[in-house]
Image (cartoon, rainbow, N blue to C red; front, top):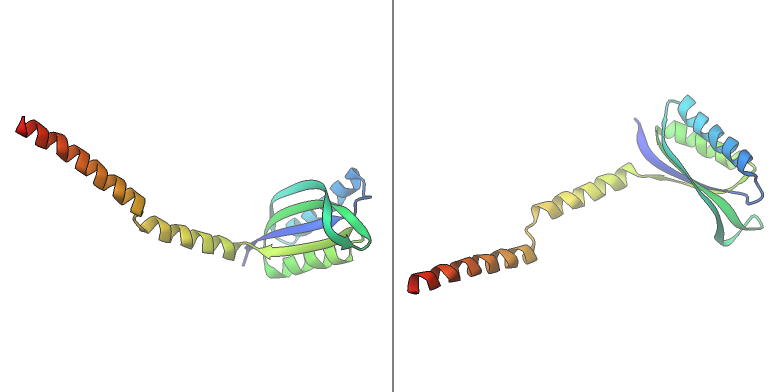
Length: 137
């Protein structure tokens, strides 16, 4: 069963751009050859780390959004773990989060806003007053 994941990984800061592109292409190939689909890949560039990781204070951030099953994600994480240039990574399953957000939006859409009710009441009162004035004049 295909699910939607975000994979964020940090690459050593001393890696050249060409090598970084080859590394990303290798991970994308892992996903596509395993039957998954890469939705997007974003290179966030070099950023400072919150704390020192493997004696590095900054790194190149990359975010991949993929559609894959659990076995493929497990294989991708294994490759991230053994890849020397990758110093840190995290994988987050986003389809559950998207379901939660959609559910909240649906609940909010069914509710009538209190501010909207106040506006409707005020608008109804304004339209009723000119009719009363016209009848009395």
